[in-house]
Length: 381
Image 1: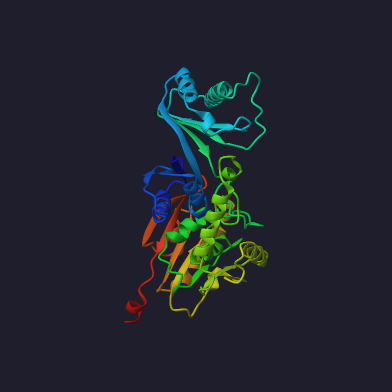
Image 2: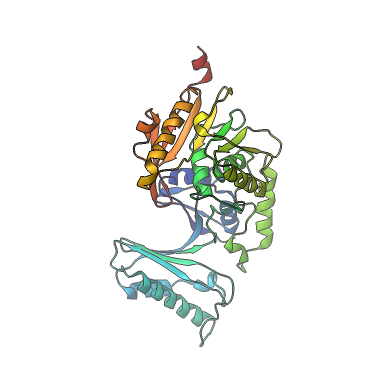
């Protein structure tokens, strides 16, 4: 079976998590900015698409080379045997980006790569007229960074954060892969610790927590664009999904919950949990985070509260942070992880974080404020 050079792309700040996920799947990795390199067959491509919780896409690295002129870009692109990947009727749009490079015109780079591929395919398939492009979609990208060209083929299609369970959402939903990243950055052990999101909105964090606890592959209920390619065997995709189903833990009991002060959002969260097949695993209720109390001995709180990006919202948001700090302070054995872009969060919350981690929520720079709980035995002594 053919082996490919591959990259798993991801948000800035979580590359190490994606690398760990890939190593846990058995792959050797090389972590770079915004991506992790690995290699594998089409079976590995399908497995990575199915299992990676924190990545955005899995791409085949078709070719890499230096280029300072459009002639070099054309010649190097044309020299690749594109017919090994693209059938005659392939629909192959070419996206592009360029950074700190001589070839800075992205539209020109896209057009030249497209022309080079068309020329090579026309020669091989003996076409004198235009290629039909009526078949399966093969999304290509030309990325030029410091005069280094990388040509890639996307195997994923819709980004991996689209798990297929979000039937409804709120105003500023957290992407599913970022939610999974936040959970994997915590010290949560599902078997013996409660998990709570007290500002759960449309329910993404608790739902992702349940998928992690049950070891359910996040891509199990969706398709990937490469499954429509003629050289990808449907039996391999079925085999990978069957393997994943066998690895899931449908029997253990976990304590996973979410709450929100808006009953309408609670209803949306319940719908999303139902769509994920997890309505029995995640419990949602209407509650105000600032009045939260619990008699549970320890646990993990992960929250993505409003950020107050608009000046008009800042007063209300700071009051919310202050209320959260007051409500959480008695919970000495609980660990709290709070994501926000507000640089003055610690002041409003009333406590300095144990640790901060810079993350990007989409294009927005945020920090994950981590407040680690004391061990239960230490607290009781």
